[in-house]
Length: 163
Image 1 (cartoon, rainbow, N blue to C red):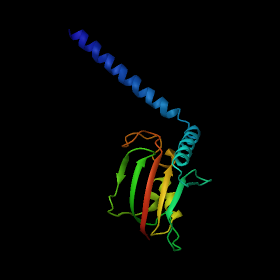
Image 2: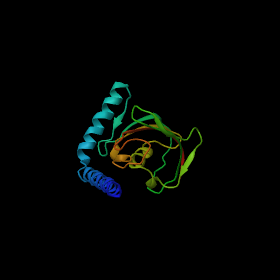
Image 3: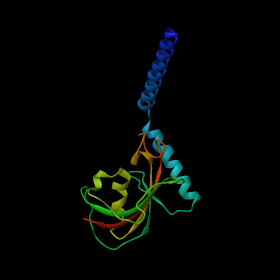
Image 4: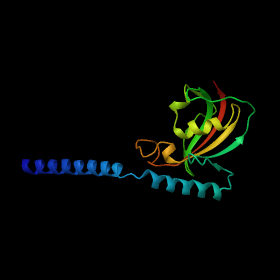
């Protein structure tokens, strides 16, 4: 009986080790360029199907729609603090985060995902922007998020103020 328990324990350890190696191999074999192409295709199909007049930033691949332009000449810096209301969802899917109309302040733009660092400066404080974020400008290939790895994200952001 004890030999059977040891054998089962050994098998469980072997399976666990094999699974861990398999996940590491997947991460090592990740092709960011192929993922970016896949993301761009999915976002473009989404905005076309939903007749959203989004613009693609040619340098970064971020798609965006300025919903409400605001006057001003604020020049964002990487350490600019921003106060926003926002709703974030997986592209074409469920909301995973929202401020529910309660503004939140981020102390520094450079602490945010790249999609926000690129997108927020496209609108002046008082404006509203919708960002369609390819996974590489969002949370990328990381697990542990409230959505799958390599998810394209859709944010609607009201920029309340910036300093």
